[in-house]
Image 1 (cartoon, each protein chain N blue to C red):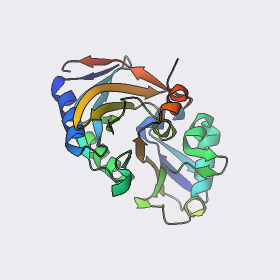
Image 2: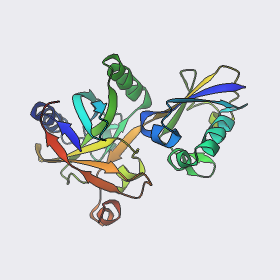
Image 3: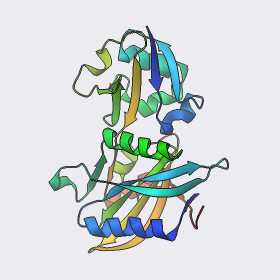
Image 4: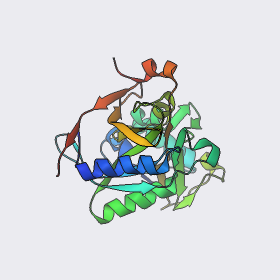
Length: 143
Length: 104
């Protein structure tokens, strides 16, 4: 389960709408709780590093950007606990491409943006054997 | 040569919870082989086939990106730090893909 507040959810949705028709992406900064939950404390917007013609259906967070985000999180004694991205004119469901490039442990939030307006927002986590994504419950609320 | 390997958050659970480990190696490849022979579960996350690192696995040697260097053949010396840093990527699906990606 991942916990976010309404402001954070709105921020992800607005980022998706702003970057439409391109995919937006960002980091989820927070902490892993002892019960295995993830609690988002803040989001960290990243500029999609894919080339112009690929941004409509692909996103990329470069390692140096992730390292910068990790440092930003560590300064607050937090971790990068996951990532979000948008699917312009598509469902908020992970693709084979998402699975091939996913990492375990992290939460993957996807927001569907159709004709510039954000709709469904879902969270996913990859099975440790890399075989599939499982839906992750989103709990709305503050820490 | 004693080399320290920094493990990213995502892979720590496959490395006994460690954020860093010290191994004996002469090259980056040997260091990663030593790491993955100690923690076999790590291998499938780092390698796409027996000898090729996944394209979204990046290796930094003492903060220097090894992307353009010989990568696995790069020699290491005593006290070096090898950092594994993921690139994060994804994108839209096609309808045909969905069944294979989602849990049932």
